Amino acid sequence: MSQFSRRALVGAAATTALMLAGTGLASAHVSVVAPGAEQGGYSVLTFRVPTESETAGTTAVTVELPGLRSARTEPLPGWTATVEKDPESQLVTSVTWTAEPDVQVGPGQFQQFVLSAGPLPEDEEIAFPAIQTYSDGEVVAWDQIATGDAEPERPAPTLTLAASSGDGHGHGTDDSAATSTATDTGQAGGAAETTATDTTARWLGGVGLVLGALGAALGLGAVIRGRRA
Image (cartoon, rainbow, N blue to C red; front, side, top):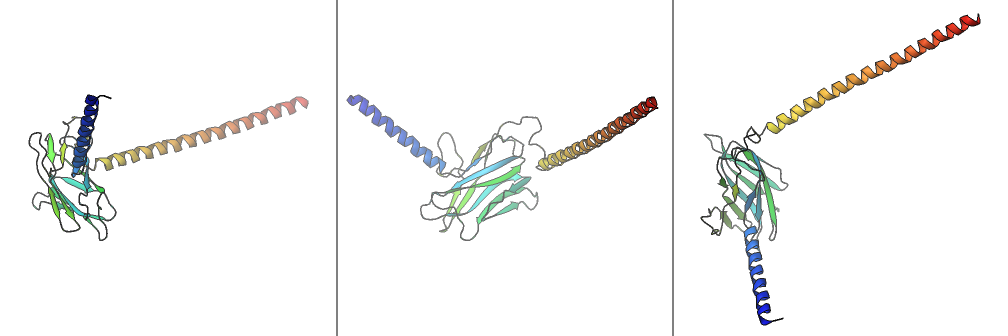
């Protein structure tokens, strides 16, 4: 192998290592994902919180919300969720997850905190500043907004929203799922009643056929006896 080829391979390896290192750093940030989230709609937000400390664990996470009408947390064993609302508007302004004693997200681990919320703002991008508290008392604020292509040291979790599809999905209240379930239950009940009615009709029809066949047999027997007589 030529000296030029060796240098090219070394350079490529170094570049790959730097890219992987950068990816690792980026993945260590608190982030939010919500596939299919639309402007003005409801969505399930998943906040991914890694523990960056090598000596302490994450014991609490607070996420700021942009004044939402509804925010419902998913039960998470070992954690207590507290939803804060503005006393005047009653809009949800933040959610805090607090670990119970002897529970934490240890070094080298991460935890997902799930929230069903909406309606989301009519913006292309929305930030959810977060505060991460460690077991040794350290508090890290993930609240810096990126400007340009440069990523800040402590970026706030940011979500890009798709334009409203205009088909009505995700724009009603978050009770729409319950309404849909109730509607489906009603339809299932109607189907059950229809099935029961069809079964009864078929049973009665079968009895009628049996009685008709029996009557025909009796009539045929009477005719035969009459001819013998």
